[in-house]
Image (cartoon, rainbow, N blue to C red; front, side):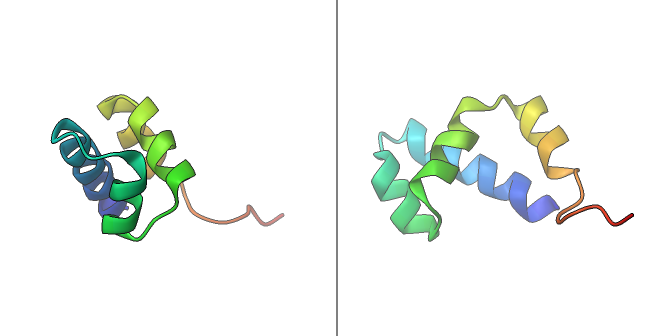
Length: 59
């Protein structure tokens, strides 16, 4: 899940460089809602989020 944490850091870096959300999404080939989601997170929240397993839980 480290790739998601790297993605979070890239989004934050581009945002600091005054990139608009649409520009960040296009640059990283992700959706604008994903960019917004990551921008609202703190580093600790992103770290916790990226450690969660992907997919549905099986019974």
